[in-house]
Image (tube, rainbow, N blue to C red; front, side, top):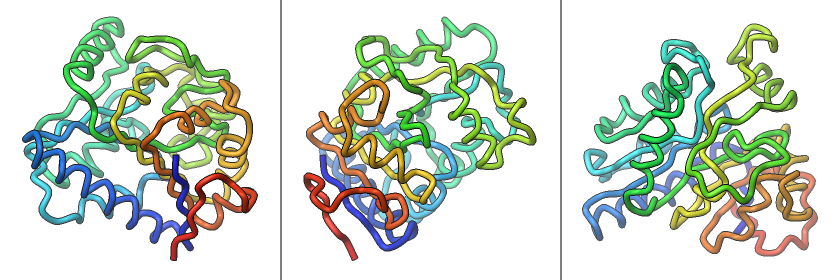
Length: 253
């Protein structure tokens, strides 16, 4: 795992988007198709904005999956991750091959169908973030590091639900759903490359715990340290509590 630290979230976003775009272009050139997993949430705004500006990406040859979706959430809701991805990625660049989690209706069928699709061939690159509680996707602590399933139904803890409220997706914390469909830890780790985008001071505690503490289900994103091709993109604020001697930390300008 490699950690890169940037002066601010825009510099972080530009660097991560440049790396993401290069990976997508190379995958299309080599195999005719790039398979990606896209993250959502407020921390990904700038990254996705920069990525959609990238030139020379044949988005018609990109296949997209996503990390998670609330149970019972209609796609029209402002907090829906299906809506988020349509507005911030799919519709902006014209992705035609995409698979969106539906948390309404038959959950077993939705999970079975998504699992079958994502397992058809390897994912070239996964974009992820880190929650304020250290979660990876909606795998809140203590996360299940062992399940071989691709997607599971999870219970959202109080810290996770408060983060969603704090980011402005819901009027009241009571409105935040208690359950969601989430990609699993092991499925994320199957990606050939992982780009972890984590700006903002509110993530500093989680960053320090996950990337300098013990690798543990109590710090779910800590598992990224076991993946040989992961880059973590931080800004000065999210990196504020890291000790200087961290493994492969690179100071970027």
